[in-house]
Image (tube, rainbow, N blue to C red; front, side):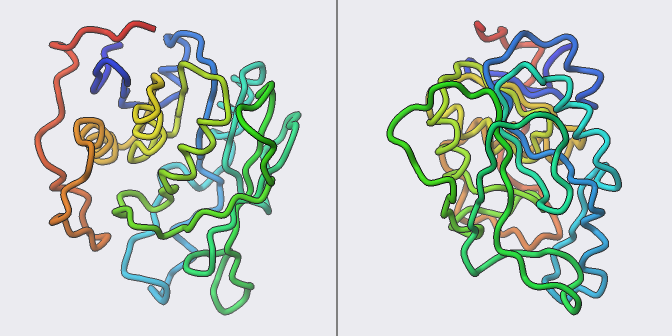
Length: 242
């Protein structure tokens, strides 16, 4: 299967990760944010939080995320998770991402406390780089980044997680707008991403071609287009060396 986009550092595939994974090479780390199966679109039915659409493909079930995590049971893995619906299997540790007070969720606003943290499940990472850090990670959920995906994670947080692990080739089977790939590329690692929605695959491809996203771009949550040049053609690009 030909990549949707590729350069010397990353490959992006468009499609269902369940169909694509068997053809991929062995990876050193899976770092991903699967659909939690919490029907995120239904948690803001009256638009009280924002005008931004809360829609995540296949978020009506956690089955797909669990299936992929089970597929990579023997591979070092870092996965974001819903505290109320944790991923099954054997996990070595649980981290807490403290988003700060500026962002959060946790269900219908009139019925639940405002949760400003998320769970990160970790397994089989081996010896970590650097000093021993706290398992509570403090990274603003808002930051200065453009909002390109409903569940986008801060690039600074993803960069930190990658930097702690010895891994040359990283996989994100639920790539979204490509934050994992962008962070990996910035750190000199190689990465493979898979995304089922073309609008996000295109955004990710454009992010790979830009060191900084254009400041004049306005994202009001109603459109995710306009990030610059068209995607590169995989047919004309050499495969990067794994």
